[in-house]
Image (cartoon, rainbow over all chains, first blue to last red; front, side, top):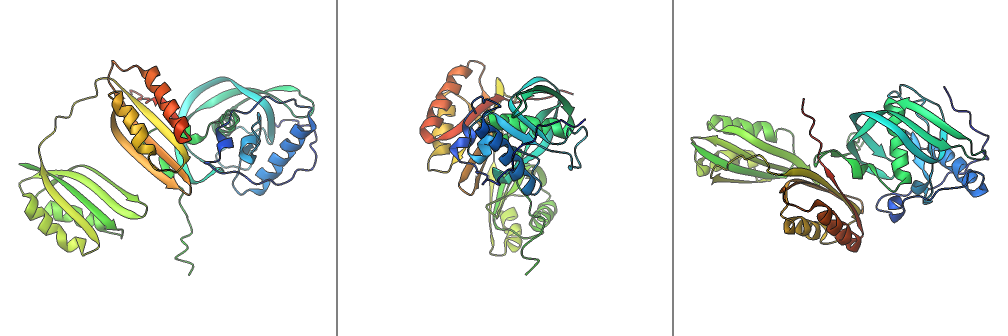
Length: 183
Length: 171
């Protein structure tokens, strides 16, 4: 079920920008998959995602580059049902979406808050692979579908904050280890 | 039968709600609608209760629980008609860098359009300010014009605003 990705160059770990950074609200421009800067950005996104604990996806806007590029990898996440392993997509769009369900989301760019967001649980996404520009279709469900929609939103300048379900759908991220207990 | 509006605000500790509810129960006051949260770490509760006790009696009964660290107010309120909204409910979401006047300006735009804010939460997280408001709009509201006005004022404030119809799934 895994996606066969072209071999990317060595990725660098980049700093993840946080809201209210204006770049997070910019709709990313379409990119040329063969552009070496784009290929390097893809490698950097993957490297940054992999060193960030709990991170299952990262988009260009989150490292300050407003382009249509993101990576997702939910393969190690307990909420995943279908998983395509590491996904790196450019100029992606959602072709079909159905079966909305509410779920709680966090984001590295909004580190202290989580929100209840309704998303489709079955989707088909089309996008281009970096380097080769091969067009791929990904049909998936559950957590991977949520992660893809979250990242495609980033590519369009949207945060989960723009999609929360009600006035009480935003929550402070719980700190499970109380610093007062370890004193 | 009187309805009382009670507010309790102050230093948070375990057991405030249990103690307040116990006092109200002993006063014969039935807890109706209530809302409690932590606002920047401060305990904050607002509730409406109904029963035979008067405001002074209930306020006096709550004082031992307040114990100097909580501010308690109790006052009698008239019954309000519980009418369903006439138009549609929308959720307005605002986020951006914190600055003075975001709520004032945007709530002003909503009020000018005849919108009634029925639920609102705001959060300051670092330098990120987030506002979520549920708004009832009368049927006659020009929703597109309101959206355009919100977008314009948001741009002046340097924040992002979205307004979406609130989904109510009828089961």
